[in-house]
Length: 401
Image 1 (tube, rainbow, N blue to C red):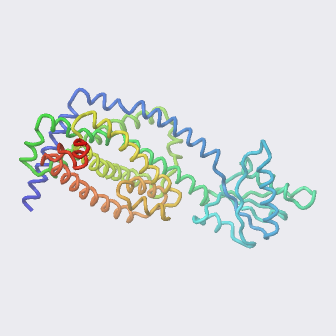
Image 2 (image 1 turned 180 degrees about the vertical axis):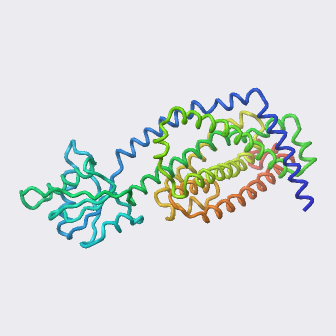
Image 3 (image 1 turned 90 degrees about the vertical axis):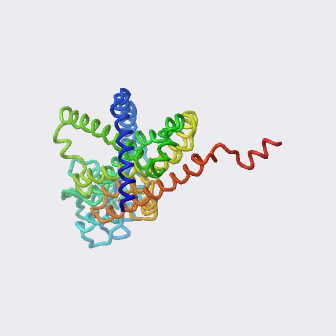
């Protein structure tokens, strides 16, 4: 127990040394200004992505009608969908005659935005829409095309409800992807610094002094938590500036109407901080182990591209899992340690359950310890023992040839 406390104390000494040397340097101001240009690019692409999602997404309408009537509506919708100049029509989902509209709207397994009842008798639409909504006009257009005779249809009755499973699901999916994007952007921006943490110590032999004084695992732990503290300092400055700007420039009504995640904004923000810390520690521990093998700044630059692409792949896996958080892809993304923080961040917006997040944080913490242990052992064996400079057997054979 005393030995572990000594290791932790030594790690905190190393962390305090690196934190002070970084934060109180002149270049830290440029570090704080660094995200401005990437942030503008991220906002630009986010706007493009939102516009594409809006253009390509199809709302779903459940139709309570006999099978023959539903078939006529579906065929009419398919015909109209191919007519140039007509906006993309909603997807129609069959529902059994006599089904309850409110129950269909509350079904989260098959999210829909509205229910059309008795389309050729006394048509009625129930959903989070009104008479001016384009969806109601599209439903009337489809019914007119599918009508078996030329008589005009009776007026459609619209029953508005506050929210439906389809509208709630769409809003929460947007929140989930936005949370993942912010988490990915911060991790990508800040974790790359860990690749070059050992360059200076290896060049001036300080690492040998540290390794002789404390275990290598302690050195890795100290450096990792020092850079996490530096990153959190930067995030605190950026967040304060962003909130101040939002309070001045953004209408409070728009802020109040922002899509709320399933766990609520306070818990979502708390989980966001926890998952950023875990994401940074997981990826940072891997980066420390990889960067510790590099001997020069040029080698670190060479490593930057593949590790960045690896981060993009992790983000893509977690982003795809938003569509099916409880499916095989969602479980895989949540179980794989390096993508787990991104996947669970998205799940916090979609599912109100809290216990899975506690289990995920414990699982991620375990893998931080495993990766640090492996990285320190790799560094001790390949660098401190002098084996990094030795040529492999195949290199010696090529040299002889």
